[in-house]
Length: 315
Image (cartoon, rainbow, N blue to C red):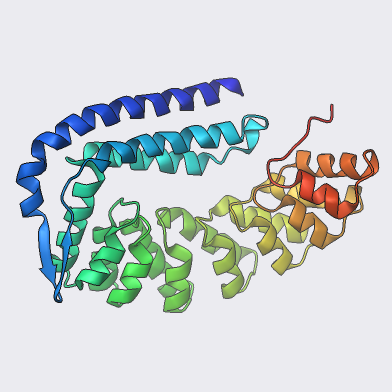
């Protein structure tokens, strides 16, 4: 598993190099863009001019990528590929935007205030996060699907895209969720993927709307729903336990971890959920059994030692 780690580390170094180049480019454009990107709205102002923090943003992203790799170097199979992809996507987005993140944020604010009629405060909330197409998302939610301005901001502020708005509309009209539930479950970048989670959990596996929201809200996918379905149908966990187990993008291995801990190693269902939540692997269950059965720890101590990515080599 070393080669993926080296690859991602190399990407991080490339981003650092890109940051150095970007800082030179942004410094040459600051004088012309700063005045253009100052707006007024509702008595407030938002100056989103380009500044020297642009290169720091990219360096920070590179550091986040490397930290993710380093944190999982002992058990690389537990690396969350979606988190890594998020960091890389944002880095590329900012690198491609003239002036980096500051200019991208300014463009978002201008569109939100001038074209969509948001207040300056709403525009600031919408555009301050990790941008993908937050303004485009909010425009579709507001003008096409009839969500309120506040609902559109809540839906799209965390890097929303048009797929995010479409996800909320599907949750509302296809699955019959409330507007609040639709916004809560779809907020984020992966709207199309979340919609798959909704269909699988709500329609196929029979989870309630509230359970489905809790299960799928953290960028859930069909894999997340499959984890919960497996935990219930194969390993006998309740639906609420399955949601707690799988909500953070759990996989079939997460359900297997809990099933093994409960059925093979004698941990209670609730203990198994605590042990294996946050994308646990069967190795976490094996670790807990070794800590309890061989090292003499209590079950709770074994869980605290072995949950998440704190997996010991028991070979």
